[in-house]
Image (cartoon, rainbow, N blue to C red; front, side, top):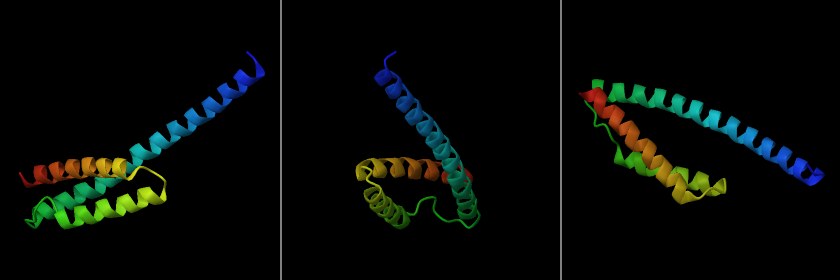
Length: 98
């Protein structure tokens, strides 16, 4: 291997290690988030509240879009991601009400 190729391989390994750590952080963060949304779902079911809250959802999408822009992340991707998460949460909340 040439010196240039070895340096590139080392840089690639470093990036991949960072990606792997960040993936783990994302998974554990999502798990923690869903623990809280599950608790919200139980609370809503116990108090006969609707499983979705469109006003909050819209505010969350706006907040996440702003955060994405600050982080130099595509805001449309952030919206799609949050919408996916919100739909999963609503489905969980509906299950608690059954």
